[in-house]
Image (tube, rainbow, N blue to C red; front, top):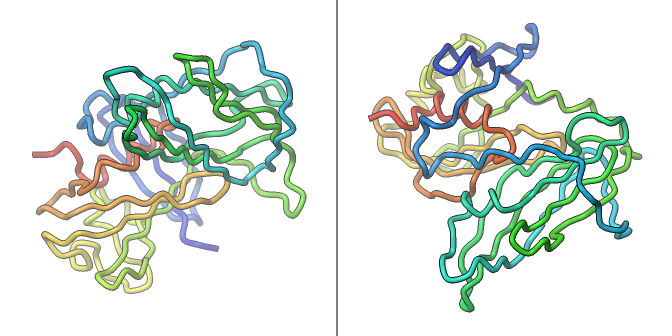
Length: 262
């Protein structure tokens, strides 16, 4: 079992705490993303609504699996950023048990094409049985539509949305899990689990490192590049947009990494 940490966000400006996997699972309250820099701000997800569904396509995916949805979207003469474009991608969920979403977008990236469209790739993780779809609001084009079925090879634990794993790569590119069991306010005050050294010693000031986050039913990694700048970090690449359907966890990551601090 990999190192797992439970995170608690108290209110919109409260304390972020990390507890070890042997402790009590903590819940995350709804948080505000308005204080985050635009380049790090996730798109707020569209609420699930009872809408007309397209005919069954025959496409299926099991719970706790992932699929990459890729499309070229026509926005006219003004091409938006990937974060802006995600607001135009409608998420539709219809769970078999009648409650909650059936999938989530984990990250998204892309770029304008030569013919003036936006090429976008969205990493989708299936969470519970039912149907899921992505629809481009401007044209009503169905970008993805699938029947999500129970897992057959194993029985994955339901995704609760309460746990987040973080890894930091060393200068050779080897990943190391972060141990936040001491309840640090900054990731720099956490510990590298397999080396028992503080992150601030492991990650030199000015160095660029790859960070990997696990927060999904499928267990898929979400990777970004960051540079340490004193007591905070900055993203060195705007893409991918991370966890656009889970702004709460983006707030937690942002505060642990010091995004938005001057």
